[in-house]
Length: 418
Image (cartoon, rainbow, N blue to C red; front, side, top):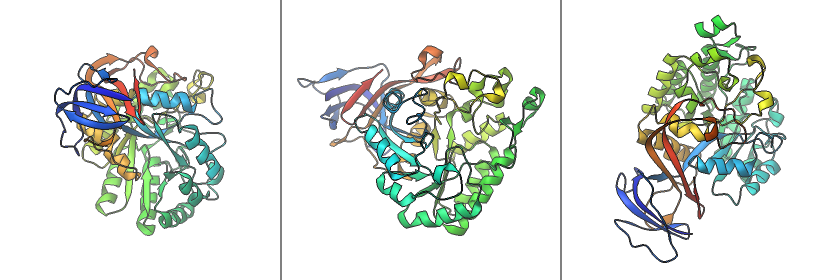
């Protein structure tokens, strides 16, 4: 594959070409030359796009695809194409499947299934067998097979001793342990944020306290054991503060926030639209502002889509019966762009998650592998149902004004353009 990208503004703080508008010549999947007004070689595809910006390929560290077990929601092949068309060259796949990703064979299946894609798939394996929270899974075997972290998707580690042992054990092979931020005993029967909005609607709620108690406990265990802890999809102001204080102490903790938690509030729940039923629940405007501040000051390490396709039979029901989850890969950049500066977003989609999960870091320079996301960061548009690329259509962003369009990716010697 030989292509020439014309007049691309390079966004890569590690590159000497950062914030410069350059031509980029790619031959056989590698960046051959970067310069002004390069000659077009023979047998080379020329690409010239409006307001073209190029960064290192984006990494979404929280994606569910269904396969194996829920292929009616999404499958790996199509899901990875959606990821590429959404700007991602890497995804971390949640253990939200049936059977679960709790053994080395399951990890190896996922890696083999995705081997020919433009997008690299990195499995997150279950921390416990069957995601039951009782017995630890075979973490070492799964790490050797390609798992990049261990956690039970959207389930807290209720047993404190189990998390303690996992943090101690995982240090032997430098692995990351994940713990979902929810105390299951607080707001057990709730499914929305505890607020005046939801009280008026008569919906059972999950208070901020549920998240904050769990994070406080998990950070105390991390301080006791050492090791690496990742807290996915935080949603409250106090959660940001707790993690900020832990980082000041020198604890090896990272965290993420979903794009819908920095773009939407619990005001959306008044429509009783189950596309807004997510976990953690959408929170207050105060929480949203704190999450954005946490991204800007570096407390929060990464933005994720928390992409979770759900079939219509489990979404087009009464609110309390609807499954949790929204798709989000298609809208992550456009929603985050309404809240953050461009370089802040790019850092949270490239350097920070890639370093945290110990993956190879790319730099946009001559004689390097082409691993690029192509986009226009400035175009505003209303996201409609016909913009959805995923098989499932459960998007919380339908009708919302987003900013920034994705052109596609260059990765693994493949070009995929929208």
